[in-house]
Length: 248
Image 1 (cartoon, rainbow, N blue to C red):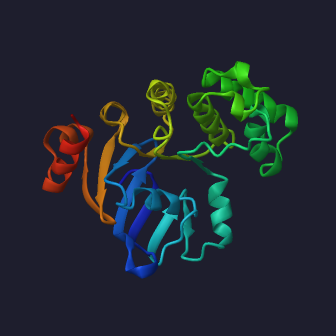
Image 2 (cartoon, rainbow, N blue to C red):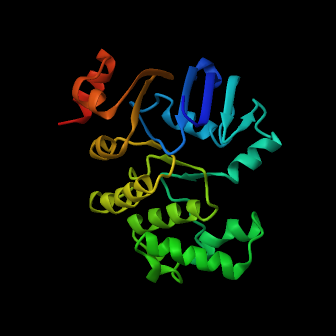
């Protein structure tokens, strides 16, 4: 175990009517690692990564993120501390429609981290340039394509200088021609050493960028392997069945 930035031990999460979303999940994410989480719909992938920044509570187990232990109480003050250090990119962008792109990115640094506005705007422009969309700074989300909006969402997450970035199927809401715009930005982050946990079905991205692939089904981790092993000779029959369905 090298520099774990996330350490989960026997996490359990149960929804109403007895649905088990997380069934004794134990795993680690190491610093500067890119961990890809794959699995069928309803397997618990999104629930898992949402526990890492307190968006989902859990019923039992132990969870430590960026050196902070999260309890089962979602109102725990520690959760707010973790959110200052962990960024998240959602499927649907979640940008504020009434704010300009620049205002979307500088909101958290100014309001939460109390940064000087000029400093926050300079950093935001650097991030937009990194994402290749610096010319869109004064526009509003509705004026951008889906791919551009998602790159804004990534820039917004980076604006607080996170130690960990979580991605919840970041390309699933995009038109096919926009997917690579976002994946290219994520590849660059991986090359720069950003610690990332990515829920995705983008096989080519996972093969190229992931250090490890976690495969989940029915709230359990079925397999954890290197991309080479997982995609070429998965250890578990359930993993192989899943791959046969998504790789044509």
